Amino acid sequence: MAVTQRRFDPERRDRIIAAALDVIAEAGVAGASHRKIAARADVPLGSMTYHFTGMEEVLREAFTRFAATIAVRFEARMARATTFEEARAAVVDLIHEDLTGSARELVLTQELYTLAAREPLYREITHAWMKQSRDALVRHFDPATCRMLDALIEGLSLHAALDIEEHHRTATAEAVARITTPAAPRH
Amino acid sequence: MAVTQRRFDPERRDRIIAAALDVIAEAGVAGASHRKIAARADVPLGSMTYHFTGMEEVLREAFTRFAATIAVRFEARMARATTFEEARAAVVDLIHEDLTGSARELVLTQELYTLAAREPLYREITHAWMKQSRDALVRHFDPATCRMLDALIEGLSLHAALDIEEHHRTATAEAVARITTPAAPRH
DNA sequence: CGGCCATGCGTACGATCGTACACAACGGCT
DNA sequence: AGCCGTTGTGTACGATCGTACGCATGGCCG
Image (cartoon, rainbow over all chains, first blue to last red; front, side, top):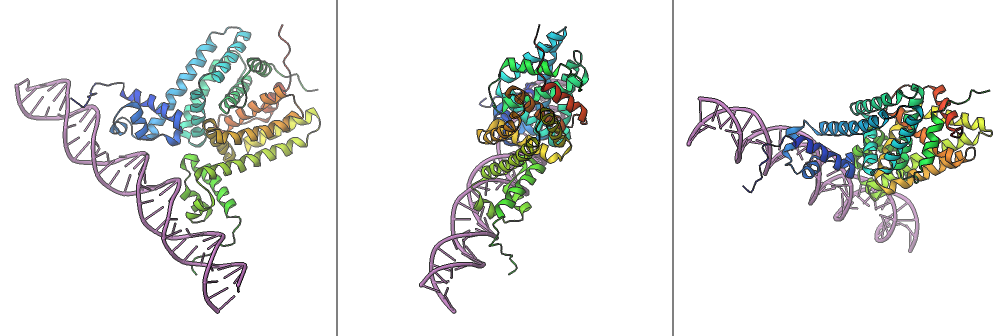
């Protein structure tokens, strides 16, 4: 009666995961707690331990979903490119979107990276993410170039997250052009 | 008597800061507490609140010192380069050192970045760090190229932190060569 | 229509946290 | 030598945390 029953709420788990990402984006992994996530998802505290074995599982699923979402977008955009020049343009587009998009994604990415730098469990998530991106790139560029592109993309993302300076699309295009152009052999 | 007095211990603050970096490297910012840091520095818990106004001050000073240390090393190495080719080689050396050096630095860097992505206070630290590095680079490369180099360096650092794959010096050299070579104009 | 069992929730416990504050210990000054 | 102010420390408090667990609840089967 006064108590709203939620017996049939199969999306409960999903809502919790989504809420977890919200909380992490706002307060960081450090500031994320079962209680805050439960409040955000509008579920009782007990649901946390019911649906998940512990905080680690929540984080793992949340970041897995986050990484998958971004990787899929990346893949979709790259798939539309057929020629080399289109591939270059697609990369520039993607970087541009990353950098001018929501700060939320940049922050969540950083949080994930920091976790991954310390714990192998989360490293698996980043590895899967990287692999997907790498696979999307390797259709257009050779492996070594893909690695460099990856590094450039992540570096530029970081600069955006740290608010280093405003982003110029032409500068990004120039950087991508350089990376994707083999250097002349040393003399 | 049994209590060892430390009245004259002017390096107490420094030891605490050093201990804080150790703890952060091991347990992350999230896992760093006054108690753990105090234990690591072998000082009583009360010393924390005596020497610092709060956790934030400890973190700020610790990361400031950390960033300064790395920036100084960067600057020193770049300063030894006179010609363009030497500058390129210096950058490759520095990246190589970063990537093959202690995981501690890579982890601490990630922790700082994540903090900085969220809080302006720590962003100041990263901005100062970037500025120092940028100043060291700008003597040899034009500003746009410096930004790209920065991004590349940070991206490669991240790859190392995430253990993406083993580092090849020649691959780094190729990436630096490309970035520092203006792209041919589009036709 | 009524009892049962899986499902889900409220609460309580022990641990750990940051911080404040009363007090011990010492060096210098008279 | 003895007092006093500065310097440093031990402890206790309130808040918050993750997690376990007993119990309410409602759908389903007989």
